[in-house]
Image 1 (tube, one colour):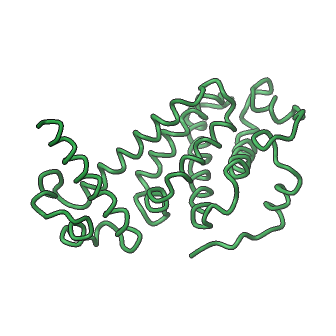
Image 2 (cartoon, one colour):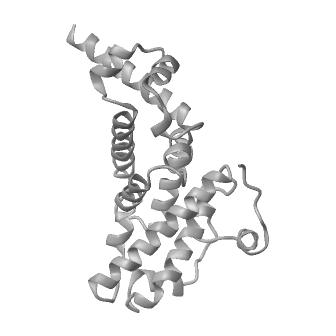
Image 3 (cartoon, rainbow, N blue to C red):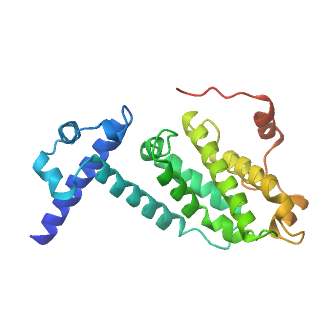
Length: 224
């Protein structure tokens, strides 16, 4: 009986979260009523109040769930891998879960969640690079990289993922390297990676000449 009740609770919550994501494509959470949320989910209001006080509390649970699931998924990636494969996996995860991220990572949505999401997920990158500058300065640099990466990913989403994940990861990787290059010791992995010439032109190691041209001469049409 307890197992059956747990399944019922999970189903009800899932329906409500899916309903919230659908409606948030049309309006911000502050303008969503419990009535329309429940009607769209096929759930009665009394069931909603068993778990939540309002749509915002439902969104908070959803955001925490998304963050935990993403960290769990990326935690399976070999921590000894270079930054670029990790970025590719991260971007693939966003694309594979586009229904959620198309909403939660939109510029007009909760910036505090988006910032926390990027900082927590990209903490791997921070631990991989030691900056040669005072701690207070390094925090500015890391925040610059994090918020710049968020902006690029948001634009990627708005453009309906018109660039492949590996190309987007390379773009973010190179932009981040440029931002921190003057603050990285000469013997660091970052400088070594930039200085070394790749032996093979795999999609996860380097951009092809045609890929580079995309970023310098081509304007991608974005979907409104």
